[in-house]
Length: 196
Image (cartoon, rainbow, N blue to C red):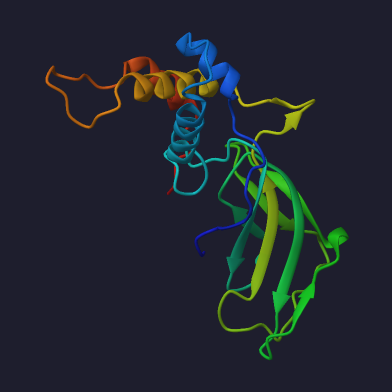
């Protein structure tokens, strides 16, 4: 399995500027640019393939490549809401789409998402040698009515982390700095995806 590729980045952040300012009791707009950049940095630290949670926080599209077809193809980033397309390349490099009725989204007992091909599906035989099969899917917590559905514990951890970075802007200090409170780890631990 190859590393997932981001197709479409999230359109929004898991927390808003207003939520972060309320958390920090900031009632002016002088630091809005800084606070927005801190929200982005903390989100990058948690979100997607390189984030420590190993999951998507806000809806985004990813592509996962495989060398061949199998009955079930794992989709490593969750939560997956839909499979958008399955395509394959032949040895000549020509790309073709698989009919959407030939596969479905399967969530196993552990929450891992898979693209599962239906009974009777016959895989094409003229596959390219590497990364011949591509599954594009939508993952992340959806935004409804311009409101994020990211779990409250993750949002709280983001807000705590942003507030910490806002208050402690240097890498070193005269006084000893402590790690972020255990509360951040405790809030995030249930949402960490374990990779095998």
